[in-house]
Every structure is written in C-alpha cells, then in structure tokens.
Amino acid sequence: MAVLMTLLSSKVGKIITTLILVILLMAGGVGYFAWYNFKREVPIVYKSAEDHFKYGSINSGGIPFFIWEVLPNLFAEHLPGPDGYQSLGFIWEEGKEMPVGVSKTIVGFPRQGSTCALCHSTTYRKSPQDLPTIVLGAPTQKFDSIANIRFLAACGNDPKFTPDNIIPAIEANHNLSWSDKLLYRYVIIPQTQKALMGLGLGFAWTNSRPDPGPGRIPSFNPVKFINFRLPLDDTIDNVDDPAVWNLRKHKGFYYHWDGLEGSLTETIIMGALAAGTKPDNVPLENLQRVEDFIRLIPPPDYPFDIDPVLAAQGKPIFDNKCASCHAFGGDRTGTVIPIQEVGTDDHRIEMWTQAAVDKYLAVGDGQEWDFTQVQKQNGYVAVALDGIWLRAPYLHNGSVPYLTDLLEVPEKRTTTFYRGYDVYNRDKVGFVSEGTTAETEGFKYDTHLDGNSNQGHLYGTELSSEDKQALVEYLKTL
Ligand code: HEC
Ligand code: HEC
Image (cartoon, rainbow, N blue to C red; front, side):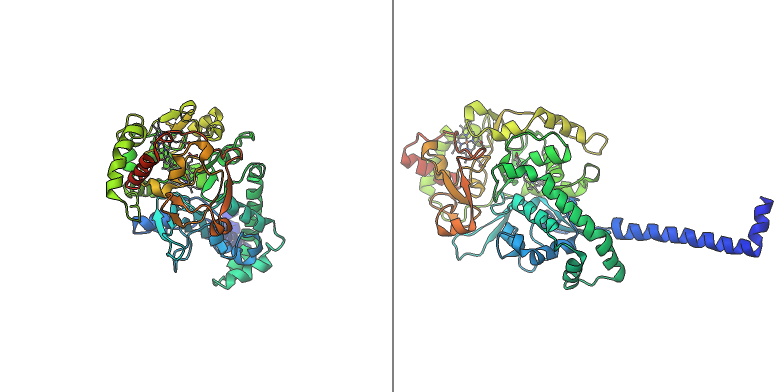
C-alpha cells in the first residue's frame, strides 16, 4: 500500500493515474455511445386512441425506419406495382409520415414496426370514382403480408443493398451526422441486410404452399416454425384477417377462427407476438389502450340505402335459421361448431397442433403476462355477424366473395375470383371480385387449391330466392 502511495505521488504515478482516468472515461464514453445509439428509448405517445391504434408502437421490432423509407425507391423492381408500399396494400393517409399499421419508435435510432391496424383496418369505395373510406378494426382487404415479406427479403438479397447506395438515399430525406453515417455504414446497414436475408429464409416454407394473397396471412405457422422452432410440417394455415370491433359484446366468446383462445387480453398479446414483439418486451400498457379501443369501436354502418320493409321480412328468417349461432345471446354464438357439422375447409384446424399449444402455454412463463387459455379445438367459431357487410370475402379462409354466394350451395358458389380490389358490390354484398379492374388490381383466388375450399356452411342455402333476398337485406343492418 505504502509503495502504491509513493508511486501515485511521484511524477510517473501522476501520469499513470491520468492514463487510468482517461481509459475509464473512454470506456464510459463507449458505453454511453452504445447506449445512446442502440438502446436509448424516446417514447412517442399518441393522444387519440385512433392514432394509437394506427401508429402506436407495440414493440414489434421491425427494421431501421430510414432504411425502410428508401427501399421502394431503391428496389422498385421488387415491388408488384409502381406505387411504393401502397402496391403491397398499405393504406397511406394524406400527408402522414408512414402508412396506417406502421409505427415509428426511437430505440437508439428510429425504427419501423407493425401495429395491429396493419391487418385490422381497411378501405372501401362505393364506386371506382369514390375516395377510399378507412375503417379501423375492419379486416384488411388489400395488405399482402407475404408479398411484403418477399419484397423485404428481395431487397436484402439484392447486390445493390450497400451503404454506398443506401446512405445517400437516406441523406436525401434526413441529415446524418458523421457518427450516424459510420453507424449506418458499419453496423446498421450490414445487420439489416442480414436480418432481411434471414426473413426470406425463415419464410421459405411459404414457397411450397398456395399464396395467401391480399387480406389473408399464414396465421400460426410462422410462429410455430420461426419463433418456436417446431419442425416443419406440411399444414396450410392461410386465413382471412378478421374484424376486431365491438369486442365488448363478444365477452365470453372464443377468439381466433378455430376458437383456440378464450381471453381477449391473451389474444391481443398473441397478435403482438405474431407481429414481432419479443416475449420479454410486451408493452402491456400500450396493448391495454388497444384493447380498450377495439372493445368500443362500433361496427360500421352499411353505406348504401337499406330497404326497411325487406330487411324487416328478413329478420324472422335470420331468427329462425341463423340466430342460434350468430345473434348476440344465441345459444351457440361464440362457441366452436365441430368441423363435421359446419363442413368448411379443415386445413386451418390441422395446422393448430398440441405441440403449438404447449409452446404457447410456456412462452409467457416468468413474464408479467401469461397464456393460460390456449387450447386445441376441432371446429370453427360461430362468430357474431356485426358489421358483416365489410368482412367479405367470407368464411375463415375468405373463400366466398359475396353474402349472396354464401347462401348458394357450394356447387353454385364462385370458384375463381379476385381479392384485393376495394370497390364495393352492393348487389351481391361484398367487394367487386370479377371484371377487368378487379382482375388487374386483385389477386386470383382459386377455390380448388389446398386450404382454399369453399365447401360447407350450408345454412340458408335451401331458402327461396325471395327469402334469401330478404335475409341479405337484414344482414346489412347488423
Ligand atoms: C399480420 C397481421 C396481423 C397483425 C399485425 C395483428 N393481427 Fe390480429 N389477427 C390476425 C389474423 C389473421 C387473425 C386470425 C388468426 C386465426 O385465427 O388463424 C387475428 C385474430 C385477432 C383477434 C381475434 C378476433 C376474433 O374475434 O376471433 C383479435 C382480437 C386480434 N387479432 C387483435 C389484434 C391486435 C390487438 C393486434 C395488435 C397487437 C393484432 N391483432 C395484430 C392478423 C393480425
Ligand atoms: C350451427 C351453427 C350455424 C348456423 C345455424 C349458421 N351458421 Fe353461419 N357460421 C357458422 C360457423 C361455424 C361459421 C364459421 C365457418 C368458417 O369460417 O369456416 C359461420 C360463418 C358465417 C359467415 C362468415 C363470417 C365471416 O366473418 O366470414 C356468415 C356470413 C354466416 N355464417 C352467415 C350465416 C347465415 C346467414 C346463417 C343463417 C342462414 C348462418 N350463418 C347459420 C355457424 C353457423
């Protein structure tokens, strides 16, 4: 000790002390630099519940915002159309920095993420000349999640994905400091490229199954194969995105098409995990705000005239033929109807395995939240039909374009149609699914492909054409 004191008080000692101090300060500086540039969180809070639903972060990760912004210009050839992200079905409100369903957060640097509104909001038009109306909580009609993933992966695999191309493109929009530029060049761009290539590999299994197309996603296989690393199986899980409105009235219902969940709060956490949120980073408060919002948003009113006399004639038909499974308060509404009884396509049920249930039951262990109501089911939920007019195409796999079609026997239902065109067909009740524009703008849906069958649900098919017309008029009022 005495030797040390002598040393420190000597000249040499002073130099050593200074050096140690400098090294300590530098280490602290590096630590601070790393924290500031990669971990520092600047919360972005939206005052209105609508904006929170559309743009509020659910910690879903995503890719660096500045890179995400420039991809459509740099890699336009990998997009299906000329309108940037809109060609993948993103809804972009006039003058906004990002589309509905995309969040921007700052965790070190600005990052892009997905929100619930990406799959749970839509546009519709009353005619081709009409401006789009956005409806929050509605199933997306246009967003093509697999095309989006393939676009991002194609960017990552493109030899043009280099700092020399990306940094100048970012600088056209934002000022980057010299240290930002170094970070983008040596850390952020290479890591993003790796992540995008990984995304492509992670979803490679989708290449050997029918494409979901716009308005549908592979529902739980991504989590099974990518997050849980369960062995690949050959199940097909393409499903229609469902509506999430009026949920306070769905209390006690099963959630998800096959009813695999019994709790709304758990269903919402599942939505976040599927969107990319890590189990140890679930933003419970933000999700609670979303839950409060979707419990309360009312189903949208049918935007055309309804014939009140005809609708009144349809009500007793509904009460007689449909209400037990579909009216609020119906004996079986919100319960799972066995697949043998409803007879619709069974691929979605096959996908949901006991191994997936077990993984979900374990994934929340030790967290502030937990899954306790996940289970294997063997049928589909008889959902309430609130706002059913905007939930076309119908059934869990979106295989029936119009309400009028659903009331026909399967042999008479449409076998090929086009999804993703947002003009409404008021006569048939659903989105316009045939004709030149629907064909050009839409995605061809073939009911003969695996997972796409339009069989089953024969209820009401035996009614006279007058009764069907009255019933459909009543369904518009729900
Ligand atoms: C990538 C698209 C996507 C995102 C993002 C997404 N969901 Fe979903 N959501 C779906 C699909 C598809 C289903 C049906 C899945 C199934 O049953 O196979 C679903 C089911 C649901 C249901 C059950 C509806 C019912 O009545 O059965 C709720 C509630 C829900 N999502 C809420 C949310 C919330 C809240 C978020 C954000 C935290 C979210 N979702 C994020 C696509 C998405
Ligand atoms: C025995 C119960 C039962 C009866 C009765 C019944 N349905 Fe259904 N319905 C279901 C089930 C189960 C589903 C979900 C099937 C699927 O998605 O594969 C469904 C789905 C639907 C859908 C599609 C919902 C969506 O979001 O895509 C509509 C529309 C519908 N039924 C209308 C009717 C009408 C109209 C009647 C009366 C003529 C009727 N149903 C009678 C059980 C029933």
